[in-house]
Image 1 (cartoon, rainbow, N blue to C red):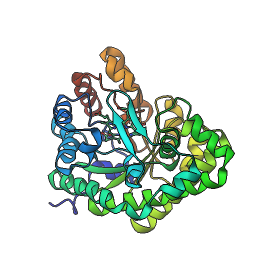
Image 2 (cartoon, rainbow, N blue to C red):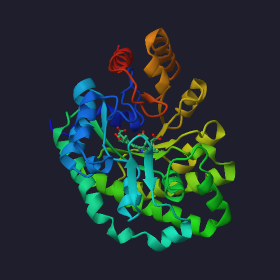
Image 3 (cartoon, rainbow, N blue to C red):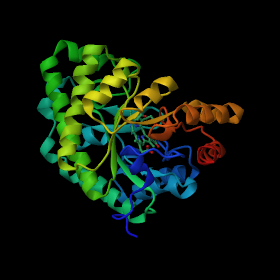
Length: 345
Ligand code: CP3
């Protein structure tokens, strides 16, 4: 049977079917905790060099599939591909994370070149095509991008920040230009995701890793509305492709409002979301999450009991098993193997 006739379990669950055993994949599942990733990484000049070599990026995307047999592969790339493709200088310094040439929104709008993203997006899409060609038919391929707010925090600060102060100040000081920057990022990101879908991505995830720091009205304006705009545009072009939102740190009323307003098919729930709340959200959308990545590092009996707690608590609604945030480099391989066993047994 070809992939077009076979719908992978992950896609069924994202469309609202519930399964006795949830499908499982892990955010950042391709990366430094894998020796085979570190080996390939050592050959590359830089992290971006890896992302822009479809042959390597495809191999890295498939590494966790070959080793663990996850239910989904996630494209190997980064949320900062979008600013890079827009012409902002992006670098990943060894041990320091991303470094960008930072500007205020007004200056960014003057400098960015949305018409020039084509070449770089095409390279990423070649990775998507290569992965899809090498993927078992029951394994889904997830494309992704960063949400406008989270990407803007890096573009304005020039690096990761604990409190996103530069972007939050810019949003207060110059809301007009900030708003235009967010809209530009939303539109370019829709184009980018749409191209990933045309190349073979079967679902997409929008990472809003820094959604949780914003007060209500700002969360509405810079996270909920832009993601709603993106989801609507994607729906119009690709009605059958599920969209996963990950507004990290938005719990309680904010998470419920996010799901209802954006119309995402699924919501990534972070580690802090109470299981009762996650179960309740599952009445409206598929819920994904939310094991603590540090518990996957620690392992042992607590990993087993907490995994069982999640499985028990989220029973009865469509659930994708995942972490509440990305896997960390020091995670022992055996703990990942044990987790998959537990979820599938
Ligand atoms: O999930 C996957 O396996 C797919 C690939 C992927 C990467 N980054 C690879 C990566 C995905 C989906 C991302 C998303 C991403 N990137 C986010 C959103 C998710 C989250 O974690 O909150 C963010 C905020 C970024 C930006 C980014 N990229 C940072 C802050 C860093 C440095 C910190 C770190 O973890 O190293 C990166 C680098 C990065 N992105 C690496 C990988 C494998 C490590 C780079 C290396 O090997 O040198």
